[in-house]
Length: 306
Image (cartoon, rainbow, N blue to C red; front, side, top):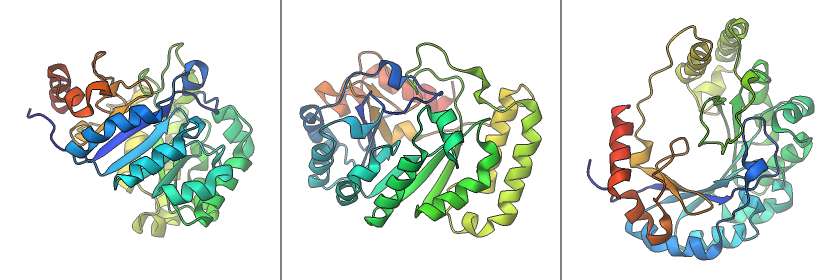
């Protein structure tokens, strides 16, 4: 595989810390580091050489980094489109400033009511998060809602579409809860095994996807629901496989050829779900880290599906 010469998208974890207490994640337990302004400044020559167009600020919770606004402003000054991925707990407080800095804000929202939200996210913050989404939307920024479907909330599938519209979001997207990947969520102590659907839940999820196709056809057709019916059914196939009742949906992903992740300690990974080589660091240049021999070999293995 040829070296990477062009990287349209880069994701920067501004903080390992988080103000949520999610059942699916351990950043809030162990996270300490923040990516500071100086480290981001050192990335700029690499981003220019790679022709990067969009930078996603993520974490942990990026708004816990005291320099988040300065970092976003620096990136915008480079002509980059800056996208915020946030839990939304403090979004209402920062909505006006965020609206000036970000082209898109994506908020994780895993319940359509306070009780479900608190059970999954570990904090009683449903109303503040909804307030933040409304405030950001009112500030004119494109706000999208991201839902992680799991056993505690899959019955609210259609309700998420209605809630996202009510809050002023421009789009809602769905993904299945990950129950196996320690890298993606900084897991050190395992995780609760009852997050995925059980065999007796699968028929109900299928029925709710069918209902979504009937009752929210316009939202599917216009792209307000980001996933097509086919992609929603891949979520059903995934949970069926987790239950041992069928194969996992095939994955052919080329994301590491077009994007990369830099964590709060400067380590470089090819994507959110796959760790990079331990020695791959952005400190000597993101392009150099991405074109290390072991990183190139890792992308070859990803493309091959191995």
